[in-house]
Amino acid sequence: MQAIQGKRVVQFLKREPVLTLAAVCALLSMLPVPPDRGYAAYVDLRVLCLLFCLMLVVAGTEDCGLFAVLARRLLAGRKRFRLLALILVLLPFFSSMLITNDVSLITFVPFTILVLGLIGRTRERIYLIVLQTVAANLGSMAMPVGNPQNLFLCSRFQIPMRDFFSTLLPLTLVSLAGLTAAALCTSGDPIQVEFRDVQRLEKGGQLRVMAGLFALCLLSVFRVLHYGVLTAVVIAAGLAVNRQLFRRVDYGLLATFFCFFVFSGNLGRIGAVRDWLTGLLEGHTALTAVLASQVVSNVPAAVLLAGFTGDWRGLLVGTNVGGLGTPIASLASLISFRAYLRSEGSHPGRYLGVFTLTNLTGLALLGLCAWAM
Image (tube, one colour):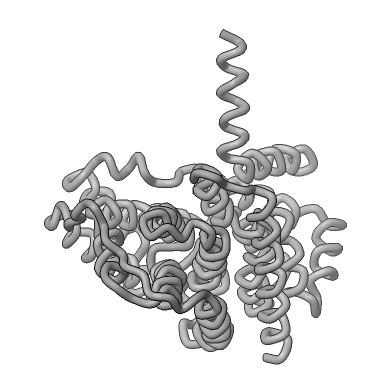
């Protein structure tokens, strides 16, 4: 019995390493700052509700097969390999703007492995999967709903949408140009893509409901609709349409946010720590956010640092650009790595080498662009 429980604990730690770290940090921070009424002010309920709603809506849309159908229609037929490579890279880039980088990679990386296997081009797997990972992490920065740290920062600092887009659009365009060039560096020989099975859209009624709910999510992000009303509508619709969707919500991410809210709030009440972090961020917000992202990933870095600076631009740029670098800089990168490891004939060392070189190149390029801005 104890052996089984121990195995479950190990599996949980492997599945939720960031949540475990966040929980430990939150508990340790309670030692100098025991729980009191001040804890209630730590948690940003709006962010948690918006994240929950978006995750349920995206899960419902994916359940209808929409993304798989669109991808197959784009890829089927005869074309040059470099055009195929470009489509495979741009699919996660643009889709991550609306369905988040995690869901984009969960959808399109296994699909890419399938396509390359069908046409006998498995030697390009590593290169294209790494580019897809970079594309999802960078494309997601273009929209407030693209990744959790953008949603959090927009809510925390009430960033005007005009300022949000003017800050990140130049970096998004540079990313698009770089990824396009990298994808077109592949060979130009002709290939034929044919899928053995037919993929069709399913659950048309559910898809229409999810489209309407996503529109409501955007209204809430832009503060037109109160997040409490949105949450009530999404829960009611989910219960009516498909109750299984609630199981596909990433509650671990919500719990991670909650723990880091507690940790960050407690640090802000420890004078010496607050003064040190405030001084560290002064004039170096973006760089500090990039470095912190390499260690704890960009979402926790945004939550942790937001309480010690008013420089939302630096945090926005630093945590988005900081998604490049180490495999944990953006936890979405681990999704691609795990999918690759499950494919036949995988080479983990070679993958990590290409991943590191590509990410550091992208980090340096976008870092220079951000500095020039």
